[in-house]
Image (tube, rainbow, N blue to C red; front, side, top):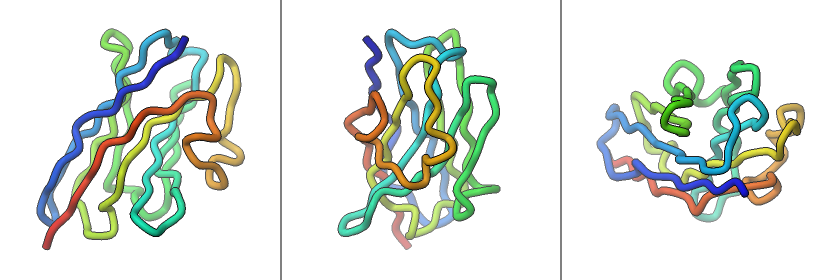
Amino acid sequence: EVQLVESGGGSVQVGGSLRLSCLLSGFDFDRHEVGWYRQAPGNSCDMVSILSTGGSTNYATSVEGRFTISQDKAKNVVYLQMNNLQPEDAAVYYCAAAGRGRSYLGRAYRLCPNEWNYWGQGTQVTVSS
């Protein structure tokens, strides 16, 4: 069974950086697509980035050039490096994984983490000016 645990959230000032981690167990990077989402209070969830099974990456326009998704297969971790953080980046960030061989890439923008096959409990990111 795939399980996901996020960590790395915290409070930073505008322009600062954080690196989020998603530790996955029971996971095969070659067969499971992984996504990062975020949700601010009162807002709907937003897709942030997708790491496809072939290693290709996709980003929301709002974070492209500032955020980077990557993986460490040896550690079973997917990272989200976030640079130049802005107040609008403040949210709870969730990691989600698709079932073996499945892909949500084509409709990821319309989904929330709990609509994927697996998701974590989230980690809070706060950005202060």
